[in-house]
Length: 500
Image (cartoon, rainbow, N blue to C red; front, side):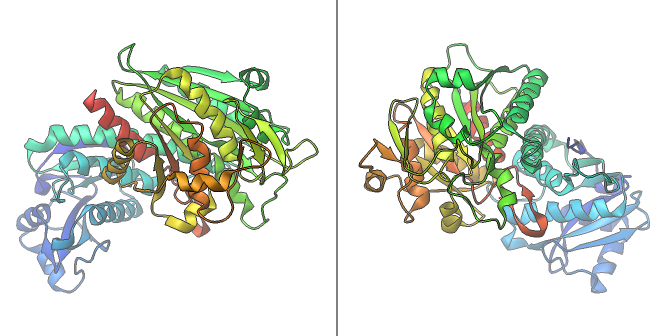
């Protein structure tokens, strides 16, 4: 649905750029970046004259647009505030690109040249800066209007050049841009799927989307229907699907970029396409946002799309259990006991703790791949939102080295996670007098006990769980899917492929 801008890299002296819009940075207090200084010298001090007049101080995210600056071929020069030079880090860099993209798009210019990738960001090279410029610019320009009868006028900005004054960094910038463009495309797919309403994005629709992705990128795909799911013994998944008229699906996608014998990374995405809570019905307020309860599945599909474009040399399997969670005469009831694929029995104390029920069967199914690692992604608990808000995703793992890999990938991608405890002490609250395990452990440490539940089904391999309930979508005026954690997962797989 979403079309990305046409990104490119180019070595071109700023004063020779004849683009409709050329964007350069200004630090506080009115200190020109190297590219801005080159423009000013060619324009015989015109930029500094504007700054001395008090039109701009260089505060982070502020912009000032200049038209037809004398002696410059560019139609427009966009000055972008970078903040204090001593504090210019990853967040400031991304904020500056965000401000530049929004301002350039508002001008009506069809093309813009951004002179940001040569700005020094401590600890991050040109490739990192190009990757993040592409991701941030695509985020700013993203719109979701698929369900509107009248579309907003298309933004004119179609092409963005990440320009360099020196040729020495062009190869690294091109590599970073390729990674950023693929990541942005994966995020856009995840956002498109997440933003669709529940009456459109059903389990069947999600399976069809996986099929389209498989055809486009030559992936292996299998979609298992109810009978096949029953045959596999996935009683936990089926218990969630009982109240819905929409048939459940179990989706398996396979990307083969590594050696035939190489163990795959398995990604598992929670695919609850609408969550009413079932018999344990949720409050009506903001229940519409429960269409986002499949954002784990959407992010896994987005990640597969990203790595397929990048042609990473590793093997990846995506598993997506998907269903609605609805009330009804056939729906599971609190107190019901079901058997999972692993053979463990589960007492369902709360039908709104359904994500872990569909994931546990997928985690058992993942054993057959003898995986190098398994990472599940789920909008799992409101408790994680209470603990970490909307900044960091919750990360749990039964291997500290895998957790550190994911944490580092999150830092690199600016899609950060926080390592949460997975201690045996928390397992006590999941005891049931009637079954092997209860599906909830009470209010205290709700995100932790949910992860502890999942860990019981992932003890045969290296496993990590990302609780993205606070980061997969935003509420309020800017309501919508964020595409997270596609950047984190893509960076994780890029790093794995580099070490393979």
